[in-house]
Image 1 (cartoon, protein in one colour):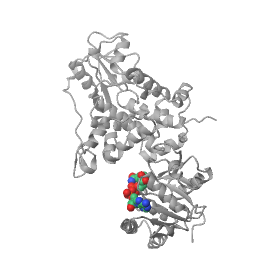
Image 2 (spheres, helix red, strand yellow; image 1 turned 180 degrees about the vertical axis):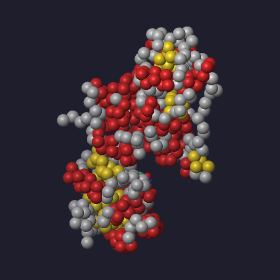
Image 3 (cartoon, protein in one colour; image 1 turned 135 degrees about the horizontal axis):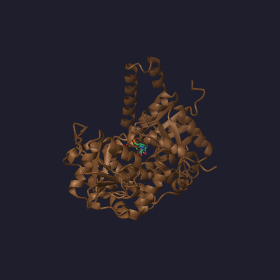
Image 4 (cartoon, protein in one colour; image 1 turned 90 degrees about the vertical axis):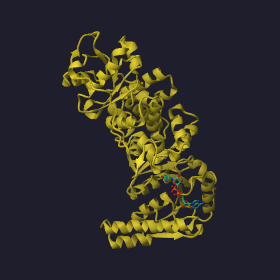
Length: 511
Ligand code: NAI
């Protein structure tokens, strides 16, 4: 007997590949009958075997009972032909990512299925509206985008095409909840929510590497230790593999008509051409030995003895100036409190979005004795100090700055001059892109944050991150970066600009 509260009673899955298998398993376990269809009979059989093996493993671990297993098995059937899907009331298509093939399959199904049967596509990159346009009734097709692996990735994007009906997206939303996953509602736009929201993280990190500011591994360590990401951008690119992620970067960039915020980098194009795809081939941004990433240790310059260190002077414009003073006091350094530094002092600037060079020039400081430190996060929130040099910095002053920070227990990275160091600029780009998604009405701010935490594993939603760091600080970073780089990539979204200007939360929606 079907569950009395089932939103759909009989679901057809097209495509028995990686996604189709996972989606079928999830739905059967939620108490709904499933039929899978695939043009390749071997794929179909092997999908059933693999799902059954999962259930047997769950039984061995006592996570399900023998009765559960029996019930699951009875709810899963295979279809030899499309006609076998006649009775279903929802279709989820997970076949090859090709618009013509997908549209063709839906068209053939249209005459077979009951008119009230809802059609959905699991496409990652194609337009739902474009897929639906081949149908006699394009209203009945929506996007239902699961993530890989389906059982573990707890978020599903429900995507409305131009013709979709609100009551259908509401039913799909209910259905996703019945599956125990979290639905987020997206408009039919390139990348939907998750693949769009993640643009800033990888593309700005690539840009930093391209500018020779820091090595790939250094950028990863900085973003993990300063901002709390589980994986650095280059570790992530190695996991997804460049044959998957580089085309996505290019596709989103071109689909948004060369929007500079999404501009990809030659780095991934070249590494893709060179076969450095990532973990699956043993070589990407890192080398993998027996599948284990080889992590190079932090690179450090020679240490200067404490008694030989110069005194320190902190810019009056430094972000979190009091906390920087407190750090130097704790480290028992000699601090100059005069308005101007002495001729021997090492000067510390802590700008938001400016590079050390520009801060030096604006404040009239001697660049040969000035270093920068990223103070975006409170020291208590981070595990790493990041110091930036400048082209005129003396070698002994660079060593002095690094030696001072290494007196503290946190890890230390020294990078070349950069407007916004590493963390500031990556977070500002990430948050800004997410703000603009809200401005475009692609999704609600709450769904955006949910999708990014569940779908990308971010430490918190990008908009909440922006709130925690201060919308005005993010705006200042972007404004200053745009001044230094003169690149429209860094122009602030009106969503961010207006909310930051009025002191509103980045999650705030107009009444
Ligand atoms: P896959 O290559 O593992 O499986 C596709 C299956 O579809 C194959 O078994 C193939 O025989 C079958 N197929 C091809 N043409 C067919 C047709 N005309 N009728 C019936 N079956 C047909 O692909 P995967 O990775 O499962 O992806 C499926 C869809 O899900 C794609 O649209 C993809 O973009 C999307 N997607 C993939 C994710 C992933 O991480 N693999 C994540 C989210 C979405």
